[in-house]
Structures are given as structure tokens and as C-alpha cells.
Length: 313
Ligand code: BMA
Image 1 (cartoon, rainbow, N blue to C red):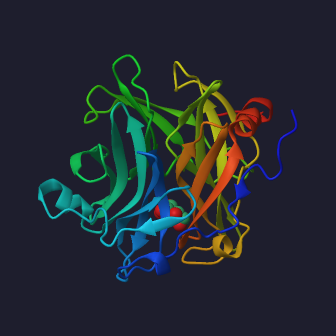
Image 2: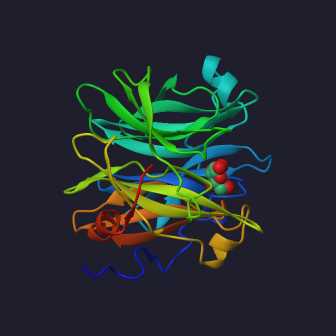
């Protein structure tokens, strides 16, 4: 099979959203979760406020590329109880995980105690209910699979470690609150584009060959780090089984707004929307400053994982 080059075709209107499109004062617009809901695309994006802390805004689109931002932020740090304690430094990098009849929102909660992941639920993007803080400190990038496996929710996550390069783990829960049976399933590959650290990116989506997961990988250079995107395929009946991890990256910083910005040389994804025509829309933050979008053929991404794969561990 001949793969298309480039694998991800960038939207000609990139960046699709910037701080200038937001009707309240923010310094950045990036790392957004996106879903199709009720015939529209809903984007929940992160913005730095001018004090350096982050909140989540909402933008809607008819076509997935041209977005209009709500007048008010969608989610700001809680002022109540345990969530207030752990969200005090801001909330970041929200993923929208469609599971059963609702959307599970996972986001990084920052505080003087470190970073952990909070879980909230919405059915309509009007009412949002926080459910629980689902990791302890220094564990983030949580994405939840759209299916329940043998009565358990399944998530990918990324703990920090001093001993091992930061890797992608899997965990299970009967109730979304208590998680366990964790094990590592994909590690960075030595002297490879993702050798420094990797982490879950967009919530995985179903293909005929497996769950497709777009993740991020980091390489350290003499002038800082480079964040790129890669693809991995997990078995449909058992997501802990990694069928293949693409040896090549699928996206790297190339446009000026990906190379220069708040953090240079970053493409970072929290959302991808599979379409009925065999394509997938992929969304990424450019240089932690703007939102970009692109399209790929699902078959190309699957083929990279199956025919040009590197060992997962
Ligand atoms: C990661 C996270 C992301 C960010 C990326 C690049 O560690 O903080 O939110 O996009 O670094 O700065």
C-alpha cells in the first residue's frame, strides 16, 4: 500500500484558533479536546491567563475547521472542597472521552501539591459535574477508551519517573473513581524521535484493525526539546495488547506557529475526530500558543502501525 505524503494534511487556514478569537483576555489557545456532538464540533481548549495559569474555553464549529468561541470560559478552577485544593494553580490539557451516553472530561489539575488528573462528566456540554480526582500527584495525560471491557473502564496514562523514561501505562476501574491493575505498555525507544518521553494524546478511537491512539513523543536537542506526534494500534478486545507502534512520527513542528511561540517546537494533541468517510480530523496545539487542525486517512495511520512498527517496550 502506498501511503499518502504528508500523512497529515494541514488545514490551509491554520492556525484555526488563536487568542485573538477569544472574547475574554487570554494569552494562548492550545491543547484542545474536540468531539462531534449533535451535528457540531465542540472544542474545549486551554488558555493561559496573563498570570501564567490556565483555564478551559469552548468553541463550536459546523465544519470542524472554523470555530466560534463562547463569551465565557467553559471551566475554571473549582472554588469548592477537594477540587479547589487541587486545581488552585489552574486546569490544563482537557480530553473529551465519549463513553456510553456521556462525555468524560479528563484534565490536569495543578496546585502546590503537584499535578494530578480530575474527571468530570457532561451529557450536553451545558451542565458539567466533577466526579473525582483520579490520579495522585505526577501522573497525567489520561485518556479513557470509548468502550467498557468486562465491566471495567480502561484508561491510558503517564506517570513521572526518575528511573525510567516517562512511558504510557494502562489502568482499569469498575466505577471511574478507583483505578488499578496498572502496567506499562509502551516505552520511548532509544535514539529515536520519542526517546525522551511519551504520553497519551487523543482518546483512542475504533478502527477495523484495532484502537488507534495518537500519542506525543519528545526528543531532546542541543536547543531544547521537540514535541512530535506518533500512532499506536491496540487490540480491539484487549487494549493492553499493543499490535503496533509506528516507527515514524506522523507530525512534527513545521509551520512558523509550531516552531515559534510560548514553548517553541511543539505539536501536542488532546483530540481527534474520526469521520464516516475514512478520514480523521486531528487537532493540535502549536508551540503552546495556537490551535491547528489537519486530516489523515485512518488506513494510512493503521498501515504505519502494522507495516513499519517498532517494538512497544
Ligand atoms: C507538556 C505539557 C503540555 C505542553 C507540553 C509542551 O509537558 O505541559 O501541556 O503542551 O509540555 O510544552
